[in-house]
Amino acid sequence: MHLDHPHPGPAALSADAHRPDGTRRALRIGLGGPVGSGKTATVAALCRALRDQLSLAVVTNDIYTREDAEFLLREAVLPPERISAVETGACPHTAIRDDISANLEAVEDLEDAVGPLDLILVESGGDNLTATFSKGLVDAQIFVIDVAGGDDIPRKGGPGVTTADLLVVNKTDLAPYVGSDLARMAADAKAQRAELPVVFQTLRGGTGVTEVAAWVRGRLRAWTA
Amino acid sequence: MSRAALLVLADGRFPAGGHAHSGGAEAAVKAGRITSAASLEDFCRGRLHTAGLVASALAAAAALGVEPRELDAAADARTPSPALRTAARRLGRQLLRAARVTWPSAELDVLAREFPKGAHQPVVLGLAARAAGLAPEDAAHCAAYESVSGPATATVRLLSLDPFDATAVLARLAPELDRVADSAVEAARRVADEGADALPAASAPLLEVMAEAHAAWPVRLFAS
Image 1 (cartoon, rainbow over the protein chains, first blue to last red):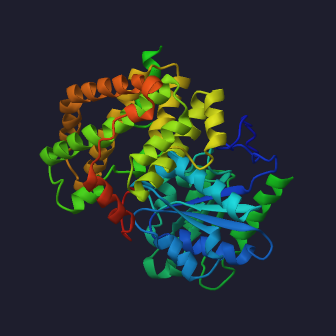
Image 2: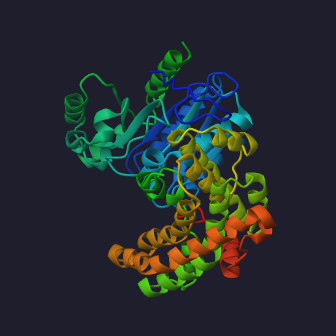
């Protein structure tokens, strides 16, 4: 999925696939989902899985602090100059969907400062089931939910669950403790999403973020092809 | 001139980053200066006649075709707080991005080349109005209105203030806002003969001081 809408003039604008110097910009992948579902942990795991092969950066959208950015800094998943925090004025979904201007500045500044970059992960602040990313900001989006948030979330659907390019059902290790039925979640997700992919993941042991990292690599191959 | 274009530019949902800024309202709420619709009105009136008047005149002058570099320097000189200068440039850059897609124009492209990290927002607003085929009066009204609509909507979020009361505050300020815009345009028209010194330099010291403190808060809802 290439978003080629070149604009004339000095600075890149929203979805332009090329930077002002004519080079292809980084692939931008958004991660959204409810509060506490494991977005930041997934971003951290992706950075660890991909940073040796790819030039990476992260933009976080915290609601009222820099906590997500500071978590990533503390975990040292990337050097500090590759992590940027956007302030969202109490409305995280506005900053990723309705008014993407601050996030576009952040991704462009990262490319200027530490580029060339292969991939920029844009993490939304925790929000609700309707929060999706604008196509002017990201090329693909991952929606992260977790089994402890209730196994009826895939059935309820909503734009995030239904339309995200990848749905991640996180914290599968907790399913027995919270009474969540993984088979039912998988069936409901399939019904909502048809052929769009779903990954069940636990970042505590098992295969961890491997499947999501493989999906990201696939998107990157398509982007650079 | 198109009246509908003015509605597009003045729309609070115009995607230029304003939603993340409170215009000083967050600091004033925390300090106990805004606690109700009445004190919101006092705050907005103060902002309208100081920062609002200056922004309105800068926007009108830019819409009249005054050299943007000269206006940007004038805006710097009228904004003592480094945090507010940074916020104004950031918002200017965001507005420029939105305006260049909305009303493509050679003047806006030149501005983006000359100010890659952003010019002061009211200067960009004036040039955006010009690109939209609007008059200096329109640019002045937009800037004056933004100077009070931002704090009003931010206060609805910060205090859970009744949104009808907050909107009524804006409506009550409308006649004053018209007068501020008129005087801003009058000053802007004198810039051609008298230079940028003809622009108003009204200042709200508490807004500037509080903006510096606010920028250092570790936990806040709004960027300024």
